[in-house]
Image 1 (tube, rainbow, N blue to C red):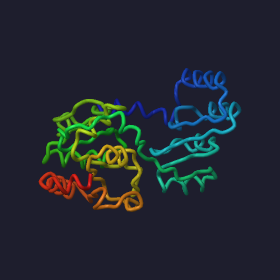
Image 2: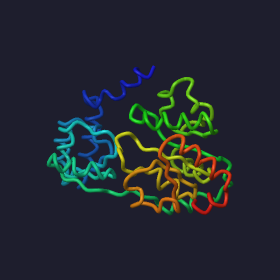
Image 3: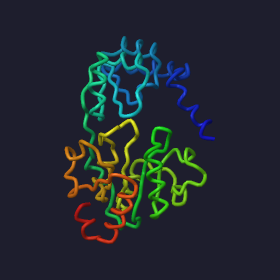
Image 4: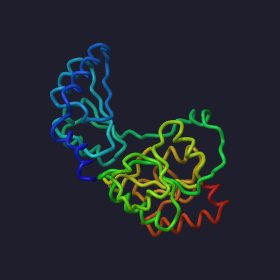
Amino acid sequence: FSKIQMFSYIHRFVGRPKWVQEIALAQIKAIKPDIVYMQDLSILNTDTLREVKKLCKLLVGQIACPLSAEENLRQFNLILTSFPHYVDRFRKMGISSEYFKIGFEPRIIEKIEEHERIFEVGFIGSFSPHHNKGTKLLEKVASKIPLHIWGQGINYLSLVSPLRKNYHGEAWGLQMYKILAETKIIINRHIDVAENYANNMRLYESTGMGAMLITDKKDNLNNLFKVGQEVISYENALDLAKKIEYYLKHDEKRRTIA
């Protein structure tokens, strides 16, 4: 079944359907924007991107996922990325690129009332072939500790995966933030292509909603948070499980960090 699902990634090699290109071009021609800003750098084919550049002043992309085809990347006037290691790679290709930090929008707090933290440990995220290491780690933890799961791509998991036991479906927008406000400890793991750099939105969404974040140890984590005071880091599945158990038993320490 997982091999069938991989068909969704074929567009990276053969391009997106013609109707996607036609609709995007028609919208851009109608709106006449100065800047076209894209967060999926492979949704338009190379020829379409060339046409888009004729219709706007700047074509800008944002990426923190596996790279698109190089010919696609070269069409952008600027690529922003929260992956520090991607910046030099783009520049070596001759593509203008800047490190773009992401963060938490505090106005969200005004929309989410304070909630009782009814879930002890949770994870909200995606499952895909690009998250293999993180999925295996979460499965090891879930085999020892009840772990509540929300997210997309559940069909990428084995039918006997322990992550299915407390799977609650997908969660988006304010519903996702409400779940974060109802959870004591949120686990974070990064996509494989993040390599040894912390960058994802879950870092900020979780801490922003007052959950205690336990995240994978990365070289730049101390540049983003005071590790041990604002977030907790782990080195492997065993270390993660031990720290979850510790902070569930030491509630005052957990709440202080959160």
